[in-house]
Length: 128
Image 1 (spheres, rainbow, N blue to C red):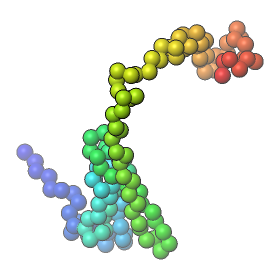
Image 2 (tube, rainbow, N blue to C red; image 1 turned 45 degrees about the vertical axis):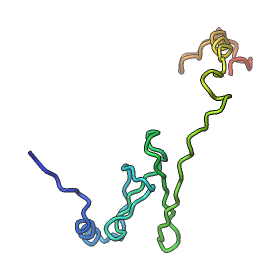
Image 3 (cartoon, one colour; image 1 turned 30 degrees about the horizontal axis):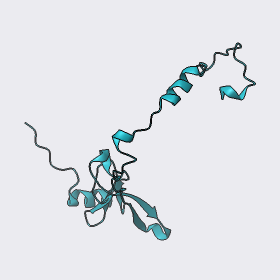
Image 4 (cartoon, helix red, strand yellow; image 1 turned 90 degrees about the vertical axis):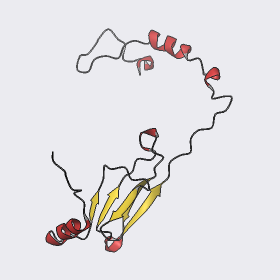
C-alpha cells in the first residue's frame, strides 16, 4: 500500500519558488469555499471561479486582478440565492409548451453542412 504526502506543503512551495525564481504560483481546478485560498505565506493561491459548484457547494467564486507592479487582488463572485417558490413558478403552474413542439414539427430540417439542398428555397426568411 502506498501513502502519498500532500504535494502542496509550505516548505516544498517555498523551495520550488526559490529554485525557479518565482514569487507566486496560481493554481486552479479545486473547489475552495471562498473562491480563492492563499497557502505557504501567500506564495501559492488556489483559484476557483465557479459559484455554487455542482449546485450543492454554495461556494463563492473568484477572479484575480493583476495590477501595476504585479499586485494581485482577488475579486469575489458570490453565488446567487436559491430561487423563491412562488405560485407562478410552482410545478402545478408549469407553462404548456406544446405550441412550441407543434412549431418545431412543421419546421423543415436543418440541412447537413457541406451538402447543398437545392429543393429548399433559400431566399425565404422562413428558413433562418
